[in-house]
Image 1 (cartoon, one colour):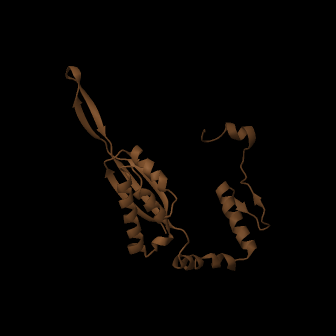
Image 2: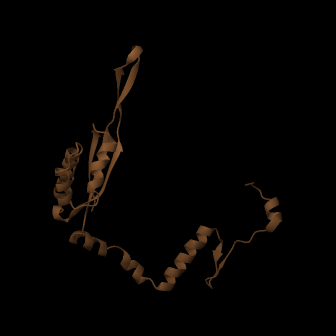
Image 3: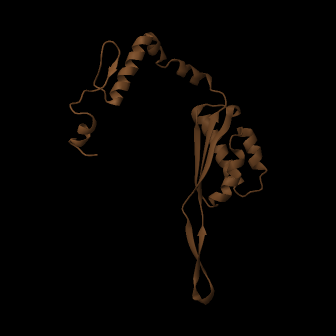
Amino acid sequence: MEVKAYLNNLRISARKVRLAANLIRGLDVSEAKVQLKFLPKRAAEPILKLLNSAIANAENNFKLSKDNLYVFKIFVDSGPILKRWMPRAFGRTAMIKKRTSHITIILDEKAASKIKAKAKKAEPKEKELEKPFEEIKKDTAIKGAARKGWQEIKKSDKITPKKKGLGGLAGRIFRRKSI
């Protein structure tokens, strides 16, 4: 089960945050924490807080064990840019862009929990097993024929195309609608 956590409008540029985020992608939660704790980047602290928040979401909201979690996805998008002005020579100004970023972290389970595994087994696969193989084959042939625009399927399970009055060159010349 995927657990998400977001951090919006972090006042560090996305390019700098991605350097720290790429280090923990795919790691176990405990390894990612250690990696961020000793990383000498300014972006490591907010990412560590976000990781702890995602772990708390998993434990409290979804009753998952933190030993079974890993960083499935982490991505950093650029946020709104604050524009400031700096005076320059000859009375001119230069724009300074103070960039922000949005971070999304998605945690997932290494091994599926027992509750999730039981729910998957009770899905409607039993209904398909009740049908004989020939009926399933016939159903798929009918769907395929409808998709291709064919008119009918004979009882002998052969698919025949629609019969049109004019075919070939005459059919192309005297179409009602032009292509």
